[in-house]
Length: 522
Figure 1 (cartoon, rainbow, N blue to C red):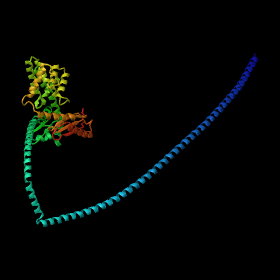
Figure 2: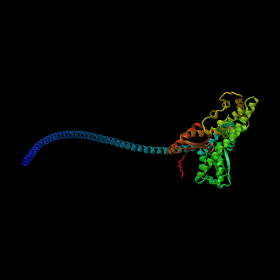
Figure 3: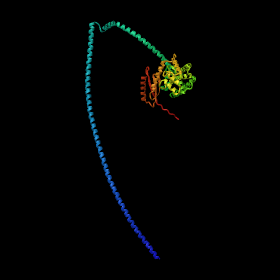
């Protein structure tokens, strides 16, 4: 039994060893196969790399040849351009040399000609002087010969000659004297009439001056210096801001505020009175007081318009129209106050409408609004008739009111009793003796036209005619108009005024450009 076990164990051992050796042999054979495959792949990769390297070398040579070719072409073109430029420079140098030689030759010739001409002139001058001396000598000889023959001197002969001429011309002189005496009388009569006309016109001008100035009382003359301010900055700020002309002269305890615009002049007068009472007269305070007074006047004219509408009992009216009625107090037409004229027309129209069986309230309303456009003419372009009709249409006024506005200047036919009453009342008020003055109105039209011309330019904020219309002050927007453009604008405005306005003397155009920066500390 033991022997069988030993025999079985030997057989298993021998079988295991045989299997081990057989397996090792098979593994070695497979390894050799893998090694051969790897070597073959390496050879293929090496061949492919060698082929790619050859292609790359060929490509680089082609690129190198192309670059060399381009370089040679560029080099040839550069050489050709350089050669062409060198030829051009040489040609220009030769041309310049020829031009220079020609010019030098011309200068030399001109110099030679001038020298010869100068010599000729000098010779001619000497000849002329010599001839002049000979001529004077001959004249002296002739005079001596005449004096010797006549037995008298030159002065004696002249006196006798003049005496004879005077005797022969006495009759002619008398005729001429009588002729010019008659002409002198005629001319003196014309001149006298002209002087009378001028005197009359100037008398009316003084009346206009009274209507165009306000007097501001001062407690003492020291205030004049404070109003003027250092280097005139206070009076400049006052005139620029308020658009008036402030006249400071030797009149004791008084200054004058001059402007054709009654509203503007009234605001300036009130502002000056408040500044004088306050005592702090400097640009910032001037602006503050002016703004305060302007606001008070706006509120005041609305309040006055409301009171007038209520007193006239013409019904409900838009606040803007009542404000314009109040503003008529500061408007004049031919020297006649526009508000006084309006109230007069309204009352007369009401009375006449009542007599003719018309609507009294509507007639008075039309009379109150017939010249409402005059409150807008200082701020808007156009005539007061069109402006008044437009504003009344805007606020839905009665058609009879609109017709009265147009009809009282003949722009439309009269369509109602009320319109006819307004037209008749307007004519009566204007024709009343002493109601209107033509000289003042023509002056107002002229200065208004000057302001409108200046305001029509782009960039202009405000334009004021001052100094009795002899100066226009134009304030421009500094962000839109520079210094050079302001000079050009002044020339253009002056030229347009020359072409469109008839005026005596000169008109000074001042274009003012001011930059101002404002910020608040919070």
